[in-house]
Length: 69
Image (tube, rainbow, N blue to C red; front, side, top):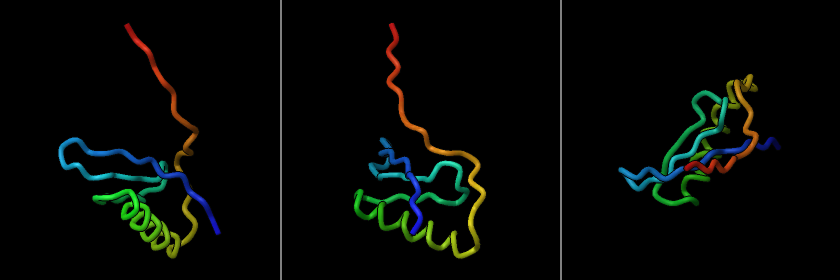
């Protein structure tokens, strides 16, 4: 069992949740609910792994809060 970190955002134009795995080309999806997005991402990552283990081009480290002005 492998674990990947997904970044999740909500599109202000469509209202959809959008998720992707940093550095994993093709590992992205969207859905109306977080639960559906989670399932979609599991499915797409599983399908991509069938082609072999990816050479990740980036690694999720974390988030930072930036204060200005």
